[in-house]
Every structure is written in C-alpha cells, then in structure tokens.
Image (cartoon, rainbow, N blue to C red; front, side, top):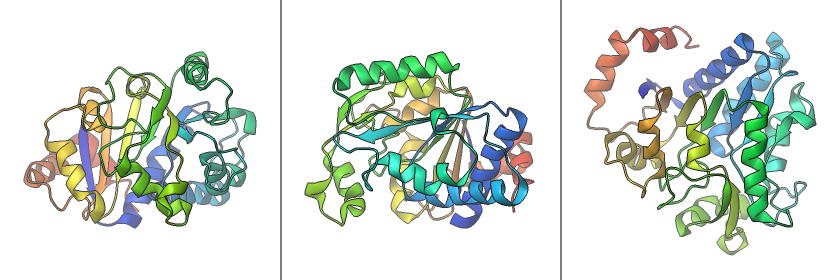
Length: 266
C-alpha cells in the first residue's frame, strides 16, 4: 500500500480523475470498478471535463459499480443507478450495456449477488477499482464483521451507514433502505489495482484507524493492507489525525512511484 497526500479536496479530485484517465488512455478497454458518494461527485465532474475538453474516450470501457440499495428502481432519484447516470454515464460516450450495477429490484437477491460476481469474471476482472471510505470504515457496503473473503451479496446496513446516507433521503433516516447489494471484500480484492480516495475532516478518525491499524473485520477497509497494488489518496483534512505523517511525507519525497504521481498534480 502507498499513500499520497494532497493539499486540498479540489486537487485530490483532479488527481484521482487523472489516474483514472491514465488507465483509460493506456488500456481503452479497461474494466473499471466505480463508487458513489459525495467524494466521487467532483471526481466524476473532472472525468466529464476530460471527455468534453480533451477527448478522453470511454467507448470501449466497461464499468461495475460497488453497490445498490434494495427496493429502489433504477429510475428512483435515490438509487445509485440514477446517481451514476446523473454524475457520469449520460455525460460521456459509454454505452448503457457496458455499465453494470447490482439490481436492487431483483426477484432473487441472493442469486443477484452471485450473478454479479460471475459477470465481473466473464468480463475479465476489474483492472482498476475506485473506492471511498465510509465513516465506519466500510468499502462498498461491507459493514463491520464482513469477511475479508466475502463475495457480492445481500447485506444489512449498519446504523452508522443509515445515518451517513440519510442526507440523500432528505435527512430522513427511516427512508434509507436497510438492505443493499454490494461487491464483497473478496471480490474487491481481486481487482488488479485499487485507488481509495478519502476527503474531509469527517473522515480523519477512520482514516487514522484504517492506515495505522490494527487490521480487523470491524473495519472492512483494513483488508486493503493485503492488496499488492493499492494507492490511498487523501487530502490534508482527512490526514489531520495521522501519527505516522512524518513517515508518509518521507515516502512521498523518495518513492519513485509517488514522485511520478506528484508530477501529475494540476
């Protein structure tokens, strides 16, 4: 795992988008794993700008999103299908048939999870997976006590996740679906490369726990310490509680890969 710290949220979004764009330029038929949430909105805006202003071509890409709420039709404004269309898909040149999210309206939700993993495998596996970090340390909707070998499946959302996502439902926690379909930790870990992007003071406590340990099923993101190609990007607000900051700064000064990333800064 390597960690790169950005001065602010704007630079963080631009750098994350540029790393995704680099993946698409180098491998036009990339299989991209995508995430949702407030942190992702500015990243997708940056990608749309690269498509419109610099000709970034998504026409051969395939995407798989991390998760979807159970019981929400894809046209529902609170669904992640709707989110992705509004923030990315309808603004770029990607065919709808190349975009994939779990079906929260599936008749058999257990089978839907199994089918989702199968579809990822048939596509050739995920080249680059984009992740955010939940305030309870989840990646996707892999809540505390999720197995590090878990597969895509039906899950019950934790009280913390319901509270965190209530803003999407006009602040009404009772309107947030209690269940969701999510990629499993094991599925995520099979991605060839992972970028975890973390921004804001509200994530500073969980970022410290994630990076500085211990590795625990209580914080599903800690499984990423076992991935051999994981890059963590964070702004200074998110990194404000780290006690290992001097070590990270040292690595950023001397690690060739991190110095190459620094040259990509806007």
